[in-house]
Image (spheres, rainbow, N blue to C red):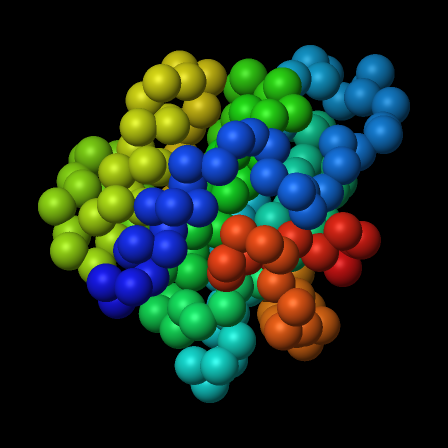
Length: 183
């Protein structure tokens, strides 16, 4: 775990946006409201402690799908850690692409409660949880909400698909690889 946290600290200092992030969707948002306002479903998934991935689905407020993509992780087998890193990645992606009002919906109840309470003293999740809380507090248009698995099914399916497409060729920032195509 200590090695992971050291790796994470090094990686989190890299300039934005990291290589490998999916491009901003080229979609006409004229019917969907403010193009800077989106709903983001996120979820993490692990398989037998060997592979893990996050699933991300970006929607307009009217429900139009803008982006479905996954992010793969190496050497992370703890489900809460996978969920939290997937959440951090999608926050950074939204910031890098100019989204100023984002409602993040996830089904990781324990993590969402910790984020909402700004509780960062969790030894396993501490540094990453602290990053997520700091990013959310710094951007008043960002909010996090718990939704049950049934309401987050799309993001879960994307995460599972990302695991099924798993490759061991992660990018240069150690443990993370975005899938560049729609999954």
